[in-house]
Amino acid sequence: MGFFPYLGGILWGFLTFMEGFPIPPLSRGRSGGGWGIYVAVVLIWGGLSMIDWMIHDALIVDGTGGAPAIGDIAISGDRIAGVGNPGSLEVKHHIRADGLVATPGFIDMHSHSDVLFLNGSSLLHKICQGVTTELIGQDGMSAAPLTETSRGPMAEMLEPLAGSLTGEWRPWGMEHFLQAMGEKKPSINVATLVGHCNLRLAVMGYRMALPTPGELRRMGELLAASLKQGALGLSLGLIYPPSSYSDLKELIYLGKVVREHDALIVVHMRDEQEQIFEAIAEMITVGRESGCKVHLSHLKCLGRKNWGRMPEILETLEDASREGVALTFDQYPYTAACTSLSVLLPSSVLEGGWRGLQQRLGEAETSDRILVEMKKSIENRGGAGAITIASLQTSKNQKYCGKTLEEVSGEKGRPSEKAALELIVEEQLQVIAIYHSISEPDVERAMAHPLQTVGSDGIMGAFPHPRAYGTFPRVIRYFCREKKLFPIEEAVRKMTRAPAKRLNLKDRGQIARGYYADILLFAPERFKDTATFENPKQFAMGLEWVFVNGTPVIEEEKIQERFPGHILKSHL
Image (tube, rainbow, N blue to C red; front, side, top):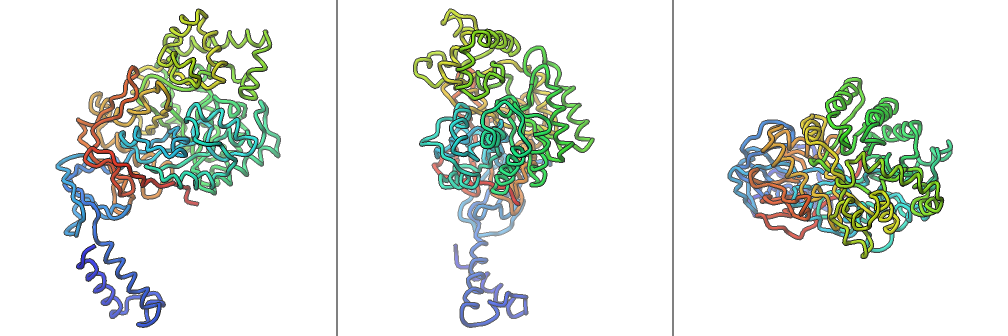
């Protein structure tokens, strides 16, 4: 660390001692352990004045939304030691930014990387986008808590979205799950929500029913325990059974538990199509009656019949905010959604999961009703030609990945609803599809709104949605630089400081002294997404440096196999 920093530290310690600076009692004596502790503290102070990295002459976009400014950034350990003009310091490594943009690392408000973290993945598809923090446990489904009876059904629900776990799912609470992720030494930071499906499956099983008072109390206790152990909030998947079987009373009750822990409800609403205003009204009521913060996942108007409704939706959110309901939302920058093919089914037939569906398909009357409802759902989502099969589990059906449901229907020689149901049955519900059913003007209106943050909602697979690889650079390349919806400082605020504040992440999401050194360096004209719907597995390009907690994971555009990520927990 150099001689002079140590010398400075020793001199500082000596002078404060002689001047009568208030020093802890153990360090006042000149013999024994007390003096040794004092000298050790002084030496550490001197050593810390050494700077590990100095970024010179960067165009700093600090995350607050303020105007960019040229300056230096000093990094010591995992923190930012100084910003602007830190002065003359001894530095180990220098980076000449020469006008490159420096921003905080991006925070993905909607990630499905739960299993990737448990499997020890390097998450290169996220690092190349500049993502340094992810929020997992989305859509009502999280990897914890799990019980002996709930782990099987939860794996059945979670793995199509998050990938197959290496090894077996085991019963554990939130604390043990976070510990397991930490033992894998993640490459980026990760925080999690508690899944509503987890609570229901642990307490009630897979029943289409409302909880008894005792069951509701036990769900609240399990939620409270998970929040105390570090989860940042509750996620609702109100389109997915068994979360969809809840009523307003249940949601308000759980919302009050969330409020008591100063946490957040993140919700996949009940409807994003014809009943979207009713779905929004439900969550506004939950926020108002419980007092908790509410964050809407992947806000959109789904289906051609609903296009053009976004201005009215945003006005509704603004009205609720003015009334005191703490509302925000996230969004991905694309005109296609991506989720399970089983959303085409009526939720009532999924009671009991895969086994429950099998039983109902054996009933001719129910089977006919299912096909009628599926045909309607396919039409509402833009028709069979607008639905692309993204991932399947069995080898015999892999030939359909990347094909539209219309093409699958032609190859099978069956109507689209029958072809879809056949795939769902053969794959035992584990089919992911891409739905091209969102309008570009609605995307732009939501993207420009100040309550908006960014979430990739990326789901991996054989033929994934390009949002898994390109979400964050696309916001800067397309909506900021090309469409000019907002300046770069606003784009960065949406992806850094705004989500950090919403999640109560201490000392993150901003380039400021004392904050964690999650930092990106790039030239805006070179930072771009390359993933497309036709060729989705393409890494983003143009990041020159990516620091995660002060450690570079991209260094001069070269990916480094390093794992400096932290497990981020609630501060209770």
